[in-house]
Length: 304
Image 1: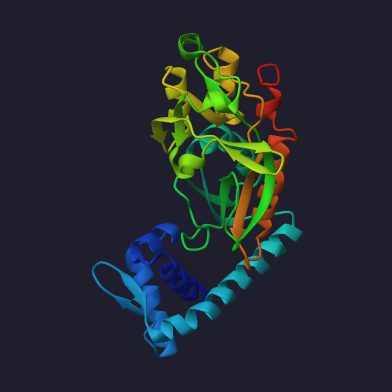
Image 2: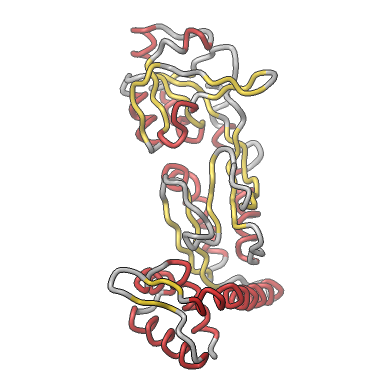
């Protein structure tokens, strides 16, 4: 029984597809099939049911998966720990992050990390949907905002302050709200994945949710910022997204007497999964690169 066969089986089971497993393993689909056939032959059991559209576990495959995954993980972690002892980090590392933060801040922090550790094979997927680290096959997922998933371990990387903003032209036309009650009458630009609870503010006794008039609902921070710059309404956005617009004067901060709830940027991984040496190194690197307070807030301290 070969370790590469076990690793291939685990990847196919987690992804549900031979093609997706081939992509993650960076081999051809035919190589994936050959490894699976060899593994099943060595075990004398059928592990997967294959069809033209999907792959599913047999009863034997489901029973075998947990131990196979643990074996693969233990070997990978042992190899990573040994590499760390030698001052080397290597091997695949697959992470996911939100589109705007990944493009504006994660990428610039990652490039010198990868130059420092050239043997790490990074796969970075930028996606604004709610990604699941375990079922989607990621080693870690960058999250912004509250972490409600109890099956995740979250490492705090940086604070993230959100501010109410609008374009000068919008404020000249409609006036600047000075209280949460006045804010309710303004046209809102909301983040789709937060729904009507997007505008959350901190107050004694718990959060206060302000519901403005629905204007636009978007699933991307860049587009929310650009819609606000275009004068289409008020948005509550992280400083890491609107910092440039604040410095350029195309957006202004609105003070309604209370501040948005404090949020954080996390690096998360599945509970029960021992993080690899390279993932621990990445977490430490990003905390240092972002700073405390983070550089994007320090650069905008005169505008908020």
